[in-house]
Image (tube, rainbow, N blue to C red):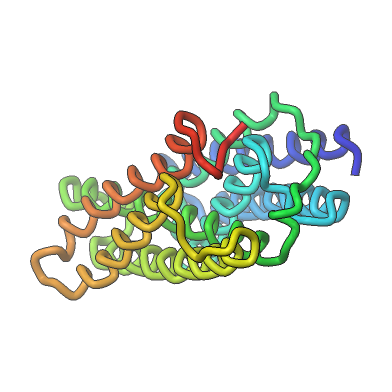
Length: 267
């Protein structure tokens, strides 16, 4: 797949996501079942173009191309879109997922001006373990982003009690599911990453800053999986933990990759 076709698919996906987002915003003022279905169709169309671009890049490269800033933004936006689509089809969350859609648009918008060229893969990354590590890592991040969104909405709904949002019980249920699924997938990311490190460098864990903060993310959300059973952390407390946890995720993904020296640089 040529860079020109990649950019065309990516731009098509971006504008379809943008249109779906606009329609979702209209629904917050004028709810309509017909409009809801049209919005979902546009989103599915955008996700299809997004997926086609991803598969094309994967086939051309011969590996999952997630090795620089453009490709991580591209793949992270895809996992966010997939996460939104899962919750939309399962719960019909509609405008409740707007934050995740906005984040998808932001990542795509920042990726579009960048060079989509696929860099050569260094030997240490040429293994299925790397692919599994990356897939489960970004899938976990996307679910943690959804949990952040649902946590914010829980606090808003607790204060406003608006019919435009799901009730508190539903928001809590979706938030807990996002946290549990995200933790499960991020656990797989840590497992495959450890095995990959052993194969490539001869150790399962190193004390570099990326590994340490990834462990902090894992422990934080592991604690949240436990906190759902602790009464004082349920409801508002759990929502605040969801918000704080995503701050840790953003630092681990962007802060370390862009601002600090590590073995996971973003360039």
